[in-house]
Image (cartoon, rainbow, N blue to C red; front, side, top):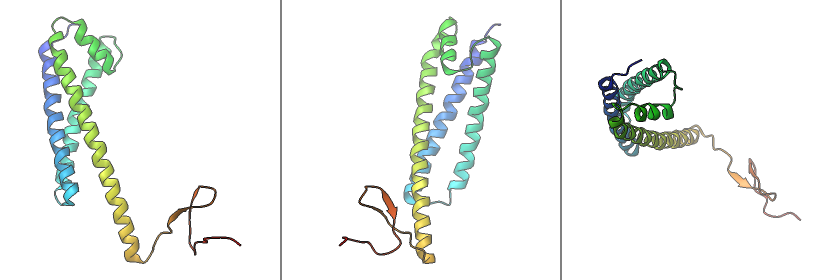
Amino acid sequence: MSINPSLVQEMIAQDTRSCQQLKELMVQERQLLEARHHEPLPALIEQKDQLLDLLSQSSRQRQQLLQRLGLKSDADSWVELLKAHQALRPLLPEWQQLRQLFEECKTLNEVNGRMIARSRQTLGKLLNILRGQVAAPQLYNQSGTTTGTSGANTLAKA
């Protein structure tokens, strides 16, 4: 089976554009989360979903191409394919750049996820305070494990 180098180049270029846009959206999302400005988030999340769908479709296309060539459908096989075909070798730096962009997006997503989890935790605690439900503090006991206490704390035993 022959490979169309211009098609592969366009796939990589499209994925790179999508990843760059995704990275920009994640930076915007982080700024909005830091400012606690939540109104624009739903539209931003919808844009992220569209870009992720595009990247997912492209990934499936790469997997199908590798399978048609009788190769494993993983990232290492894609690199080997680029290295093995003379016409595709010039695309290797572009592929490496795309992989780097993808890793940056992954890191940004993890950071944003932690920020969202922390905000949810804080909001939950504030709601409990408003409801009059104060959670028992987690304190260490004499064996070194944490326990929630619901009563008075014993400072010493006679």
